[in-house]
Length: 216
Image (cartoon, rainbow, N blue to C red; front, side, top):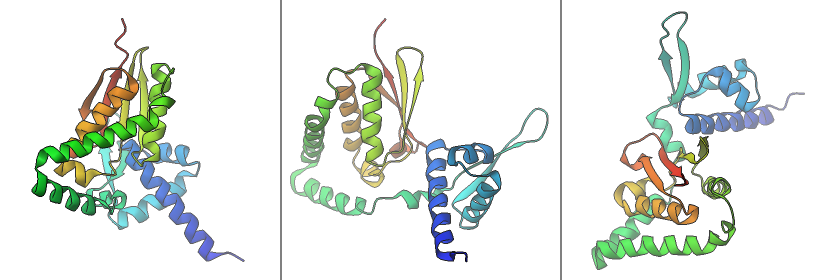
C-alpha cells in the first residue's frame, strides 16, 4: 500500500533541495539539477512545474546562434521570502533603539565586538593552515550559518568565495556595518587580501569575494 503522507514529505524534501540548489547556482538547467539532486529529469520537471505554479521559479531562455534555445531556471523575487530569517525585524528594532539612545557609533562598536568574539572563537582552527585550507574552513563555518557557500579556485593563488544567501539581509540593508564586519573578519581569518566584488545588500544576486594569496 502506498503511503501518501510519506510521498508528500519526500516531495517537499526534494523541492526544498531544489530551491536551495537554485539559490546557490542562480540559474540551472533540468539536466544539471537532475545530476546534482540524483533524480530523473522527469522528476525535476515536475518539481519545477509545481514551483512555477507557486511563482517561486521562473524560466530563462538563452538563444543560441544555431539550434534550439537553452532553458534555464532561476528563483523569482517572491522566493526570497523562503530564505528570510524571522529574527531580522527584532534585531533591527534593537539596533534602532541603540542608535536612537547612543548614536550610530555605538552600533558600529557592537558589530566590532561581535567580530572580535567570532574571531577569538574560531581563529585557533585556522592557525597553521595554508590559504586553500583556510578558505575551506571559512566556507564550512559560513555554510553552517546558512550562507550557502560556493568556492572556486582560479589559478594557484586566487579564490572566488560566493555566498548565495544572506541570513541577516534585512539587517545588512539598514546597517552596512554588518557587511564591513564580515569583510574585515574574512581578511583576519584568512590572513590574505580579500575584496568584495558583489553584495546582496547592494542589490547583487550574491555576496562575492575575491581572495588572493598576495604571493608572487
